Length: 98
Image 1: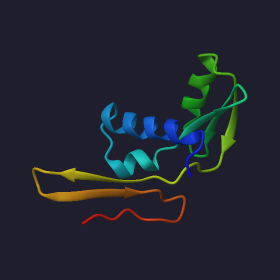
Image 2 (image 1 turned 180 degrees about the horizontal axis):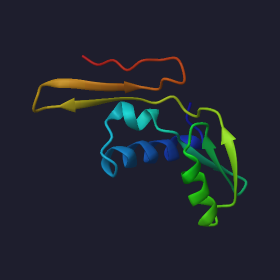
Image 3 (image 1 turned 30 degrees about the horizontal axis):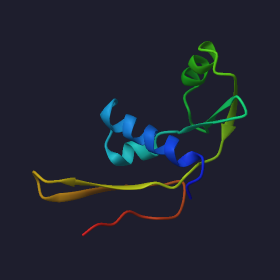
Image 4 (image 1 turned 90 degrees about the vertical axis):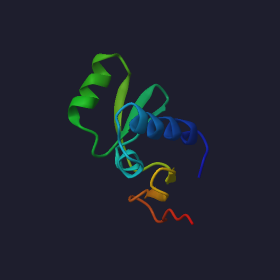
């Protein structure tokens, strides 16, 4: 795990949560993007309109991509006194907290 994808994966999850109001699981479930050799790679399941928007903005080629990374996340909800977790469904693993 890690490598070149890690910082981009973190940013995408955080943006999904803070800019788009997704919870941790929704943010992890959402298709991710990566770039490689001037090509934007989008995970299978990315809406066609998103791919068309990338092309219209001049983001090079487009290629389908299989799942990248394997995030798990746990949020502490101090107000309710609970932990809320999410885990990458496209790979093995789970998020646990105590």
